[in-house]
Image 1 (cartoon, one colour):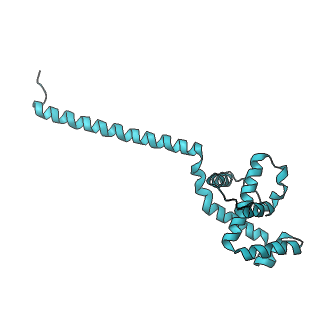
Image 2 (cartoon, rainbow, N blue to C red):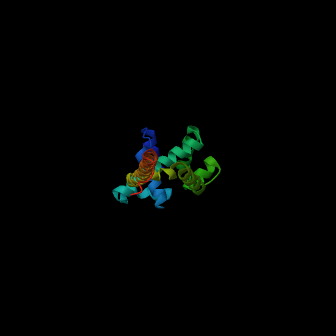
Image 3 (spheres, rainbow, N blue to C red):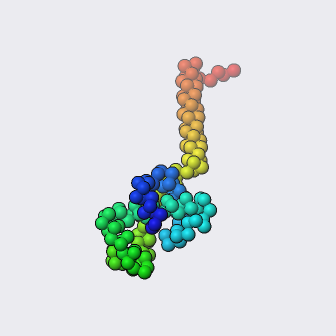
Length: 162
């Protein structure tokens, strides 16, 4: 939550690229538990980037579900209580694990479809679409030729008996 709050208060937004990263992590089942994000400095760069994105998305989700007043109350309660679970229970009436489950469901609903925005996936989709268009164009051209040949045959009076 600390990193997510820091990013949020510095007015960082989740970019389309960040959303695609979340979608990839969802598809690869690499979304980290929020309580595991505390050791960001131990992560390799790609994992740390994902952790930052997840942190910010969790804060955005919190504010989507609750108001800024609740966030301020949660921050105060985090200082008062010994555990994050107790702070969440005191603030929201449910614990951190439930919050994480709700957040994960929201991620799934919002970002899962963005997996199609990967460059590799877009490239394959474009190749398939171009192949389908090429097949349609060739069939259209062949039908047009067949129709033209049929008309020419009718005009010439049919087949030559020679």
